[in-house]
Amino acid sequence: MVTSNDSNVVSTAEPPPVAATSSRQDTATTAPDTGPAQPNRKLGGFEFYEKVLNSPRYVVAPMVDASELAWRLLSRRHGAQLCYSPMFHSSCFTKDPKYRKDSLQTCPEDRPLIIQFCGNDPKIMLEAGLLAQDHCDAIDINLGCPQAIAKRGHYGAFLQDEWELLREIVSTLHRHLAVPVTCKIRIFEDMAKTIRYARMLQDAGAQMLTVHGRTRDQKGPLTGLADWKYVRVLRQQLSIPIFSNGNIMSVHDVERCIAETGVNGVMTAEGNLHNPALFEGVNPTSWSMAHEYLDLVEQYPAPISYIRGHLFKIFHHLMHLKSNAELREKLAGSHSVAEFRTVVTQLEQKYLPYHEGKQLWTGEDDETTAETDTTEGEPNQAPAKADQNLHLPPWLCQPYIRAPPEVHRQKLEEAHRLANDPTREKRQFFDAHGNEISRKRMKKMRRVQRRPKNKNRAQRALNNGAGAVVSSGGGGVTPCASSQDNDESDDGEEDEEVLPQQENGASANQKNIVRLNISLADTNGRRRRFDELCSNDAPNCTNPMGMKCEHRLCRTCCKSKCYRENRDCAGHKIRIKSRREKAIALTLAEQEAQRKIELKDQQQQQEHSEDVEMALPVEEVANERS
Image (cartoon, rainbow, N blue to C red):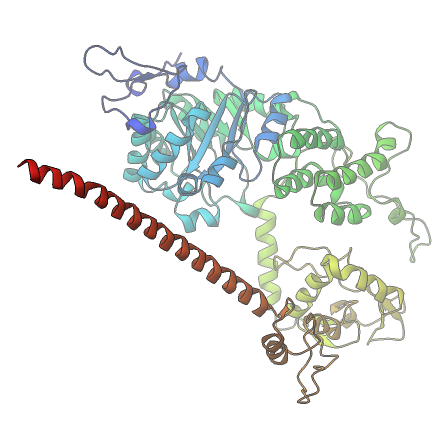
């Protein structure tokens, strides 16, 4: 049995600053008032893990913009035994009171809780820890974030090569905080270096380590699987509690990870986001989790972006069905809890009959499987599953499985090969009026088309027949894809839809033609319209009229009119009248203040003269007596 390291649980004799000394009574005891000052003792290592954290096995990871109070409480209701706060930037936390107030949202039910900070300055990290230590049970240092923003800010996993700096940060927090300090790290490819790295953090004062079994470069489409072998070795080499992070999609993965590595607890992030009841070993309906989360949000408010992100994760598999494209756009455009709840209710009403067995679920979009095959003349059959795994229906909370890195590398190699292929025909892009456009222009037009203010205009164009254009390669008419079908991401991948080959044997060039139901004139027209000229007749002005001008003038004429007639124009942001009124008010206020000062000076002079007059007879009597 591995015991706690006593050398890491007693702080040094150097006391923390008086202004920031913690008032915690449960983890630190103060020496008597008599006699010399004694160092404070706080629990650490396995003693901290067992007595303060209550030996947690199921841990919710720190997630930026995701592990807020409402989500932590939802996770605790469904089996989570320890939660981390989102990662907070130590510099913003110490300098911005509003950022700090929003970050420290908690309640009595939100324990045990560990607050995580990122940063690269020991003094700032200590200041942030001192401000937060009374609201949590430990302070965690983020040494595992691999994102580009962490590289720019020089924190997270991009500090793992600066061991002296990390040793100073950890030891500084360990000496001065009243709560233990923990670290979340990623591994190196070299096992020996990973062991030395973890031992260095333990010797510096870290009382617990969370080991993410991936390297700094394993992120995004190259994430891949976490290597539990490193976690098992570190558990054997260190004398402090170890949490494992990575490869957790269900509660069975948790038990398997503990059995294979011997860790004290298992942390999950993505698995928890897609299924908050992961630790209970169940797959509840997505709308039940969403309703419960929205109830908590009404009690403990969260930013709209957080709520939207959580609902997209919970409804991930439903929102990828084409039949839910409209609800997906509605969810993306919601800006209140009531609007979010409306979307959740609509999804529940749509899929509850399938869940209760009143209707038979046959898969994605029944209308697509009912179409007839032009070559065989028989209805298309749904593709058979190539494996024997149990496939859950999309309305149940379930994990999201990433594609292996090899698939992404194959896509990159294929794209590179096609780009360098001299025989490859360039794809052509056309707008609704047949004007040829570049691929970059096409993607921009799609973004414009997906904006909410332009959806009604696009729908009217489709109803008026603008959505159908004559193909350049034949006599058929090809309908353009709707905006819902063009809801792909703009990340630079090959996401355009190619027109299907015509039944009458159209040429292969047709496969490389993409048409949109929006034109260049439409996008250009949204920038600015010069339909009307300035209405100033004296002199006759030929400048275009400002579209928001209250006086129907150009900016030059509007400014002259406002100056002459003492007016404002909100459209041109001309505030001559307002500024004049403000100047007059300030002048009057200054005059009134000056008058009061003069009146006060007069009163003081008058009182002084009266005091002098009263003092003169006394002086005369004194002179006579002398």
